[in-house]
Length: 244
Image (cartoon, rainbow, N blue to C red; front, side):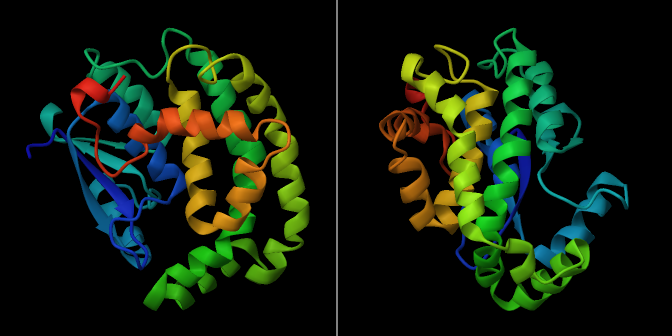
């Protein structure tokens, strides 16, 4: 299949497993917009070598990045910047922001600052385990960055679980009244939260069940919302007729 975009993603021991919260945001956005793309999978140590070569920037060594083949091999890095770029470069596709970029950015920031750090602490030991032959590389580089052992960094998991529950109250209340986080249309806000929940679901299915599915206030609403989002949360875009 021809493709307009090349997406760089990070691979663990399970081939083609979509799990990374940041690359999921770009993947789900491409799926929602229906833009054809192919994935280039990189192992953890490869990212720091390959990405600076593509971006021509030694300080830029994380994923996601995209190469827009259709538009002169334009390179764009970081999920929020990619979302904005896709809106401008592919105006004939469904909008991520629906004319209300501020509301979507607010929810992006809320989820990124309040939910993702807690989900990461619940999940990081599992990421290390699934890094396979690169497990020690992952542990050593993270412990150097965090300036402590991974076990100490993770700390008391019950505290993180409680914080996730508390910070899901507001999104849960919205989903009791609307099908999506900003109303009646899928948008970047939904993609952002769905990406972080995907991270939890893949790495910690036990916590996903406890904190999302069995959430006492909005578990049913989250489950129904995830069903509506599921077609965008796949390895490839849905068929055109099923896209919206």
